[in-house]
Image (cartoon, rainbow, N blue to C red; front, side):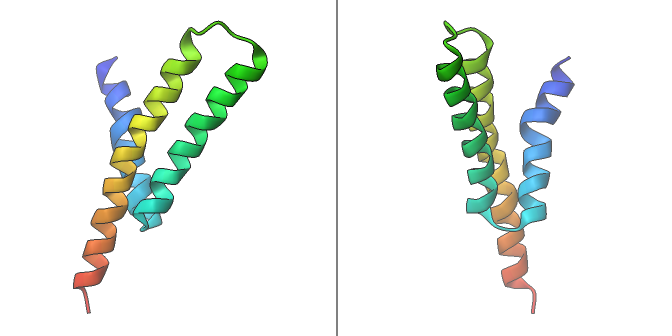
Length: 80
């Protein structure tokens, strides 16, 4: 169970950020998803529960996505 959580919230966002090659865009993808989930919960009239936790997980996934993009940017900058 724990390995799936680490894979979903750390490894895959890092890979997405590395694949995009731009740290800001990679982090913005997860931030936009988190705000979309929060907006959906607000319009659905929910009283909390799983949706805010999922949005928090998406916001936390923006960090490894940013780092993946940053690694790719630095690697591209050092190569001729």
